[in-house]
Length: 182
Image: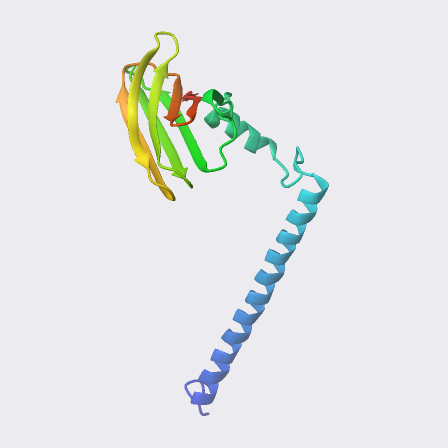
């Protein structure tokens, strides 16, 4: 009896069988992914996974992670110390967090963004200890019109700073430094 298992026709039939299996697998995966997306959209619309916001359904584990790692202090607590409140010709943002290390030292992480749209603007960012009124300047500079500066700064220090202040030509804004508990 003749063995045709090594013939070109037999080889092409094997390849064709594999291609059919891959196409079927692709269809199944597409159907499953589409079903998951459809269910997620339905679940979000109906608020199945917990608190429902207008744009997103918050699951309980998400709130727990944010509370644990983000801290309980809201970073949106800023205060205009001096100057005018509306800033239509500049963008200012400053954020800070600190972690107390086992040896008593603090790791500070400070990030900022400053952009002036219309005028030359001087700025300075300070860390402040509200109890002792001690201040430490992190950075300062001058923004030309339509220019921006940003940075991310980390520092290890023994001092306990609690707030950040960004001073500019038209006033000052103060925000709390969020303490992250380990």
